Length: 328
Image (tube, rainbow, N blue to C red; front, side, top):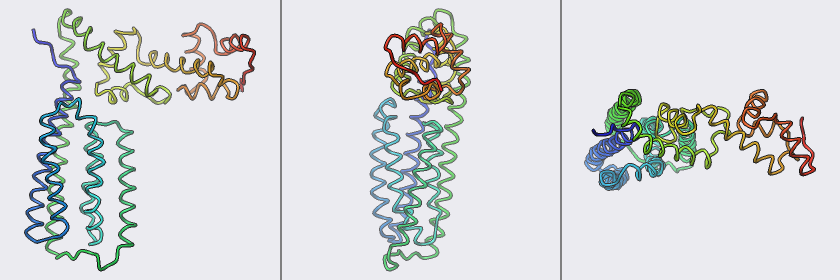
């Protein structure tokens, strides 16, 4: 019997389909803009658009040939490059008193929701705002003789086309967002209905692979130091979903997510003590730095894991090395 497709596999497949559809759509839009810019000899838009069109034709070939596992590492590179490619258009149209092309900038964070978590999207939004501000300052210093002279009809056509094409891209993004949302609900339900033998076989491969990714992310990124870190954020970072993450931790460690992440937090506290942080810093600094919000929670978790209270642990440690500790 064929194994069911995992959420990650299906999600990656949909994201690659989006990249393919997006590039085809953008290439078509650039081609239409190019035809118009050349027909009215609108310099330098014609040359800029021609170069962007060639670039996206090359990207189409790459996306169709390369696996998504490799592509996803370069999505952010493309996004940043895209913001820079749009920059000349933004400046030149701003000189003409038109801000419609700014719609392309606002579409970027929206499209990124398919690939990145909320924190990354907010960071990109801030970056875009900074770019817009620099464009505003740049326009102020450009000599008037360098401004491009537009005919009113040209601006109307460009504005209408921009709004129309932006709506097409919004529809495309919403379509794929809905597909991802659907599989996040449907796939876990389907897998619950698999036989015990299939489930056991999948545990040995799928869950082991995901668990390795969880361990690698926790050890290298230390997300548990953020008191607000959630299982949803972890799932987003690993291109998985909450159900898989929770199930994997349960299978591999026989505990829930909160207990699992608290293990790392207590381990962080102990490492800080071993590195003599207790000489310079208070207990509150150490446990908040490690991801605990309240001392009562920290004390309870520490006692559950170590079998002694934090103060007892610290006292036994300081007796051995002769150091003092700040309990304030």
